[in-house]
Image (cartoon, rainbow, N blue to C red; front, top):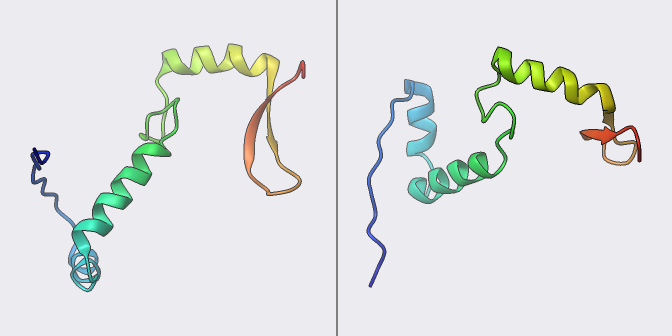
Length: 84
């Protein structure tokens, strides 16, 4: 039996709406973009861009034993344990 599909709507500004309208398969594009965003969401802030005071407290303890570093090969920023 096919999976039931839901319709979700959201507001965008006029310029973004026009760009989306110009896509050959906008539903597929939007589905893919949303799935990519969900799969690549920061595990700490959950995509909000900020952390709570309680999260900040935990982060401050965590970073005492870790470093935020930049990869010399790919230039990505990542967290490395100081003991490794």
